[in-house]
Length: 470
Image 1 (cartoon, rainbow, N blue to C red):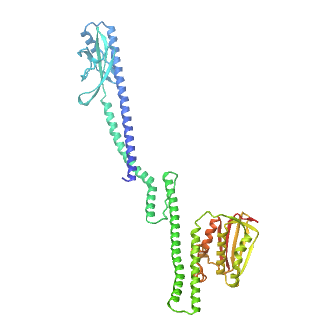
Image 2: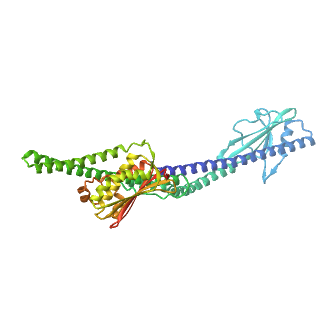
Image 3: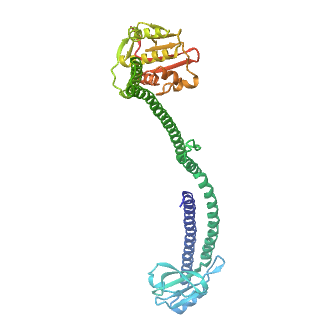
């Protein structure tokens, strides 16, 4: 059974059962109270008859049962517009006298009473009438006689039956009203669950943008808010996984291409040397090609190994003077820069930085090499180091090269991604430099920032913790 119908049936059943029990107890309580009043009235009539009989006996001298019977027939008691019927009986149940018509009792009541006791019994008379019989014992003529009277309480039972019928009709109307109200309340209460179910089915079908209204501070409202938070987190994680899968596909495709190109050249030139005699000039040229492509494979494998090794997190940091460090790193590149027609400038102040020298040297060499490849003859490359006032140190490499388009700036740190692939491959590039630099900067607890204007040049800044004056 659905939760909607469970809630609906529960509300109708609980309301109907509660009202039925309450109504029954109320009607039954009223009936018992009315019956108690009738019993009290029965006893009061019996007491008045005893009093009247005793007074007449005091006024007259009665010695025989016949005189007692005649005296009892002369007593008339009227109350509530009716004449009270009574009779006197001896211990054997024989009538000694009375006034009015008394219905015969179905079972003897007087035999259970002792002197000055009284009691009552409810009996069913002819015609479906309900009679309330009362009796009391009193001493007369040297023995115990019994005074009996009765009241017709049929109207009391008829009234109870009428109340039951009326209450049944009211309960039917109430149940119908409660059912209609329960339908509305169940729909309103369970509406957030319908939204959650529909959103869950949508997410199962791949629609991760599903959200539900999260109004209210009750349990369903908090559940809706938690569902939205879960959906947002799931959408974010799926987006990250999708992006990671895309980058993995790019990585695999680019790596396969990068490996294929030098291997093809190496195999081709080696086959050329093996297949036919060649002149010394051709041998040197082929060997040169094989050597360069082999070095390119070596560099590619080394950088891949660096990326794998950088999964370590336990590198030992040292406080290093920036001016000495940058000069030692950059000076060996000056002849290469000059041969390419590029002016190299080193601008480092006397400051210190907390770094791992071998890894940070890799960063600087990669940045300088990237700048060299992007800068045409006549350009300028500057590497600088500064201590920043907030306890950081910055290493910055700027060039006057071609720059990077804005739409590609966010992807240049992805492994194997190259803005100008043909130029990068021609110069021995693999597209791993900036990705490696970013990983090393993160290992230092720092960050790498890229700025570029197409046609004017680029600037890469590596910010490191622990900077200060020398």
